Image 1: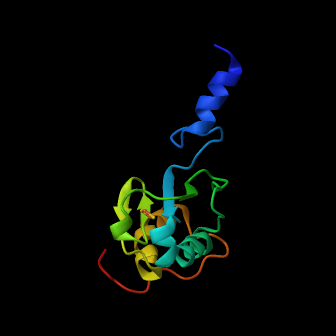
Image 2: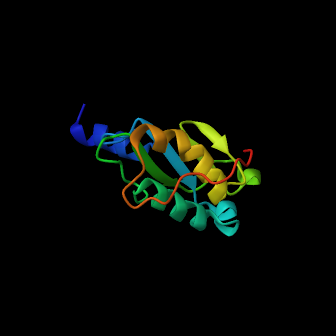
Length: 122
Ligand code: FES
């Protein structure tokens, strides 16, 4: 099989990655529905809390932050997926709560804010 064919498949599907990904995968949707309902603010908050930009993996390979353009659950917008679990109507306080176990395990990012401040249900 020609290497170009392998590369084309590996770069086409989001399930494959040419770079190592983190143990935890955080995905924030930036599709139209999520964007108009505050997806950009959610993504910025994830970036700030994790100390990563969208598309980056932490140096210790604990966390990868990804941005996607619709997860097919627009009614839940804005939407984030943490390790395969969907979290709808995402906002900053919910993000703090869902990121808490990840940040606790790997420690907060150097420029991350303080820990979660409320116990809001998902
Ligand atoms: S736009 Fe986010 S799930 Fe569709």
